[in-house]
Structures are given as structure tokens and as C-alpha cells.
Image (tube, rainbow, N blue to C red; front, side, top):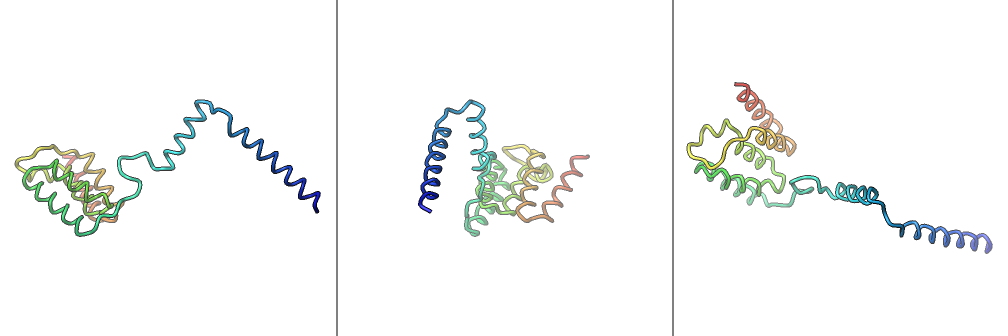
Length: 152
């Protein structure tokens, strides 16, 4: 038994030494870039939004949406979008819906003075996020309305 243990320990020692030598070899450029890409994908470094939504208390989300709605009525679309974006930081479906509305040309017809222009592609994107966040029916209706509007 002692001999087997000694053999196993010797094998582990040499295997560890070989592994350490292999790890210390310099990487080629393609190996290094491959490792960087894999690490960044694992960390979720591929999008504008954070990988995980942060916690925003519900009353704060509602207050931010109300503030954004007020700014929309006043024509400050850019300010409204900032409020909606902050409200959406928690992944709130209602915040994504109003963010989509801030880009929707159908809603822009109701605003007399404004400091931004509609962007239908972004409206579609935000309505999709709202659907993903749980507002499936409302987002679907708004997407269909926007599609009909765009066909005109």
C-alpha cells in the first residue's frame, strides 16, 4: 500500500509540474483574444443595458413614470426618456411601454411642441422589451398599431 501511495504522489507531483509549465507558456494573439471574448461574454458585456436589472422600489418607479409623463405633456421628450430609462433600470414592463411610447409616431401626433422626433424602430424595440418584461398583451397591441401606422 505504501508503494502505491508513493507512486500516486510522484505521478501527481510530475503532472502538477507539467501543468504549471504548460500554463506559463506565452499565449498567441488568437488565443489571448479568444480568452478575452469568452470572458466578456461570460460577464454579459455585450449590451447597452446591465446584465441584471437593479432593484428600484415600486413607488420610485411609479414616481419616475409620472415625472416622465408630465415632461412628455410639456414637450420635453428627452427629459421624459431619461425618467423612463431610470424607471426601466429595474426591468419594469410599464416603464418599457412608456419608453416605447416616447419614440412612437402615433403618440407624437398628440404633442404640439417637442424637443425630439419619433423613431419607430426604437418604439418597436422598447415594445419588445415591455413584452419580454411581462406586458405581452399591451405591447402586442401597440406593435400592431405601429405596424398599421407605418403601412399608411
